[in-house]
Length: 281
Ligand code: AMP
Ligand code: MN
Ligand code: MN
Ligand code: MN
Image (cartoon, rainbow, N blue to C red; front, side):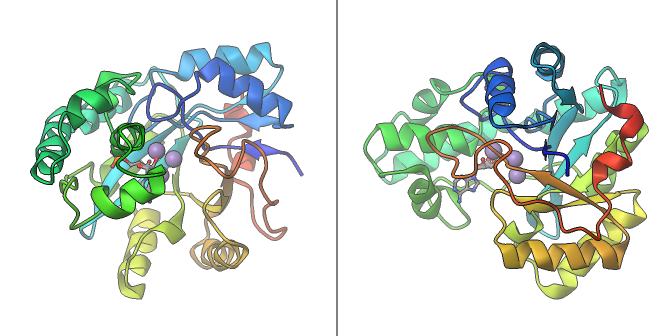
């Protein structure tokens, strides 16, 4: 089996390592095929591609697009696209738009419960101002001593119904899938076990994703248990989707799954990289 890690984040979105440091860490951990999948942003792709080349590691271009589906945020990973494609670049730019205003509103919500200066605090953790995210707020709230770690911040402040949560409308599922496909890549449903859909809503997500041209699902990912991986291996077979594998690594201090340190894909599945053989660089 190929040690492929097709999901992680750099300072270009909400990771704490540069694309170059991630490439070195992936290589040291035995990764043979790598993809950097920053949220709603492909500005790090050229650097990642060159860093992979310097490490003698195979590379697929990547991104993770925020989508709103049935009232929830769903993440769609794109792999193997042309990172100079205009429609994809423009679609991602529009998806990023609104993060600044959302962050100001998050800060206002936190101020109402006595946490001041969260916007400015979060900004200090941001590598790319267009990509200010809840993760940067979480890091600031830990630094400020409000919580002991970032999962606690999300639980108490940054999820639905909590003071720093601001509902937001991201891209449409069909648009995200189309941007990726039209740029020559493959769309993949990221970490499906992390959503809280009803069975009917989840079926609709998979069915609509497939109908729009989506071709893959993350079966093995940092946040899936063995049972969850088995469940989505079955879903991959049921919907005729290829399977992807990625750590979703963000930071040595925060991520419990390191780059490349994942179980193998179940044997009966088609690995997504087999569909992308001609896109590997
Ligand atoms: P945003 O795109 O600004 O809504 O931020 C989403 C990011 O927050 C995700 O990509 C994760 O990196 C992080 N995140 C979401 N939920 C949690 C959680 N429960 N604990 C830690 N990090 C989380
Ligand atoms: Mn993230
Ligand atoms: Mn995600
Ligand atoms: Mn991710």
